[in-house]
Amino acid sequence: GATVYLNPTLSIPETYQQINWWFNDSLKILIKKLNQPASYPSDYFNENKLHYHGNRTLEIRQLQKQDSSIYKMDVEDSQGRTEKENIQLDVYEPVPEPSVEVDFRANQDGWCNVTLVCNVDATQVAYSWYQDGKYYMGKNSRTLDIGFKLQSDTTYKCIISNHISEAAGVIYYRSPCT
Image (tube, rainbow, N blue to C red):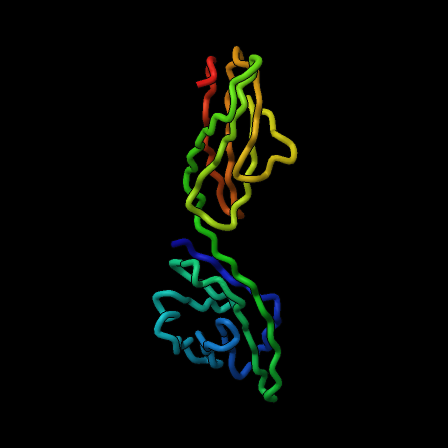
């Protein structure tokens, strides 16, 4: 649902013949000829979805995950020579709030042994765990096996993140081990 601006570094001559933008190197999504307005030959990538700015920037609105791809801009100069530039666009969804489940494995010798499972309906995410605000080094999976004294009160937090957002699931342990 967000908007992104693809701003290539390729220089455009003042008397270019044509600028083309491509999606996936096979679908032409924009044609801009010198002294003419931009045209949008694709049904999906139309004038509601795209806007070409005079400074060679391509604005893409209402982003969806399927908009992830390589976008290519090619510029044809007045002699018919073409220069190209590719821009990789990856679209991510915000991470939803996870839930933390507890699997009690044992309760012996004054210790409570459990597995915490951080569940979220998302892909391409990273996991990190915290106990009472301290980061668990090397615990970067959706599960955390822990053992602690029965009389301790502890807070566990699972943080799930991707390139654009993060969300946390929290569980509070209070004695006894139940």
